[in-house]
Figure 1 (cartoon, rainbow, N blue to C red):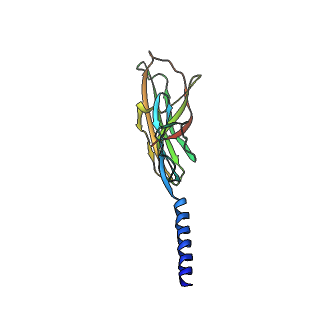
Figure 2 (spheres, helix red, strand yellow):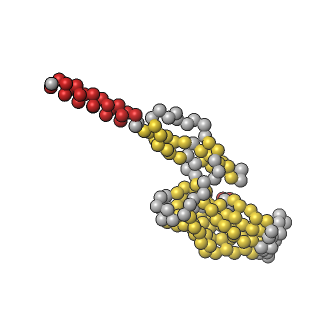
Figure 3 (cartoon, rainbow, N blue to C red):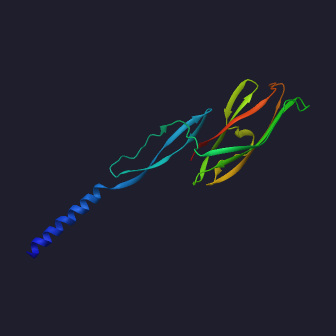
Length: 169
């Protein structure tokens, strides 16, 4: 009788361990990327999958991931259509707010309206502080300053319409 109970317990233990091996999980990194204004950005994600799931090898093309729960505040926006030196000048400061409980890495995308033309982009060439990282529940002030010859373009007005934050790794 004792041998029968030991055999029964052994069978139960084997069953328990075999069930646990069926629940084997691992974390994989899924390589992703997107293009915006001719620039490539990576945005890899991690996902928990079963142990028999194959490792991804080919990066996946995705739409730019926009940071949710994001807001911004325009601190200053000054456009001088004619500085008196045959140039126009644009200066602005914008407070970017990450209202999430996690740190983010990314790039701010500004949508500006120049007279009747609407243009979006990161404007990285003239950013003094780019805010490529914003801590959880924190804010960062991005500063932009650019002067352009009136021989290149004559713009009468510029307006900041929107700011988004595209996530990167």
